[in-house]
Amino acid sequence: MTERRLPLPVPPEKGREGAAREVVSGTRGGATAPSNQTTTLAHLSDLHFGRLDQEVAEGLLEELRMRNPDLIVVSGDFTQKGSESEFEMARKYLHRLPSAPLTVPGNHDIPSYNLLSRFIRPLSRYKRYINDDLYPFTERGAISVIGVNTARSYGWYLDWSRGRLNARQIARIQQRLEGVEPARLKVLVTHHPFIHPPDDRSRHTLGHPKEALKQLADSGIDLVLAGHFHKAYSDVVATRHPEVKSIVVAQASTSTSDRLKAEPNAYNWIVYDSGAISIVNHQWNGERFQPLTGKTYRQEDGEWLRNS
Ligand SMILES: [Fe+2]
Ligand SMILES: [Fe+2]
Figure (cartoon, rainbow, N blue to C red):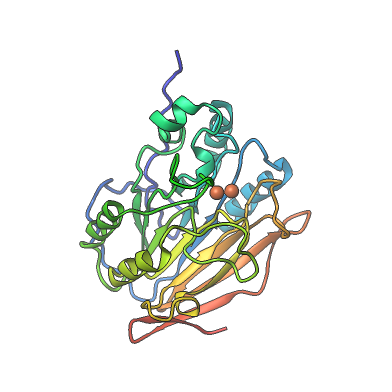
């Protein structure tokens, strides 16, 4: 009989001095946004245990312990095949991070070979080994972050790696945001991105992205973090969908796996300070993670614009 593993806890709030302290899980939010407080976030994705580059994975741990962000987010694809052994390795790795991460599942976290598991209990292993909360929520500094599952076990199409967000899920996100102070930066974490990278249309974005983005932007979401393409980029939504109220989207590359798509392993370092968002891609150079040129975003009349 399989031993039941305890899920990773909802990440506790960490003070600026680095000391961990408890927050109540399942609150409706409403924390006051500290004015001009710098909040840092490390955005990892697509770890893909089963196809891990061990040296990069250890380098990432070192990097994160040194940088000690206010929050670590992992936007899905913890495993390659969704097997028990891969999930066990992923779970052990997550426990070595400097703080408990906020996580969402990816399409690779639904078992690909065990069809009974895939169709009857698609996320049971993810929930058992990684996180049993499919709407994780936390507040750090001036940022409120909510995650949602976009992976599906099947669809009326051949490519079951595609992702969706349904009306019930969007309603849950809207409900979650109701108690959040308007001044806070509101971040949504999904596995599937809403817009393509500029140079890659080889895979599908989330289904019906424009309609979902419209509802999320109108609900107050400022920034969406995703993965899946194994390509890093960030931009404002207005670039692709000028009719939608503009928010910022950022996609992280695969942070630790050898499933590279023409760019090195990387993660995004995100800073929110004095009403501006900075997103810098940190790439593995063979020895350590190194920052590249970043982009910054500001808000004007309720819409997010790119500075550089
Ligand atoms: Fe992936
Ligand atoms: Fe994926």
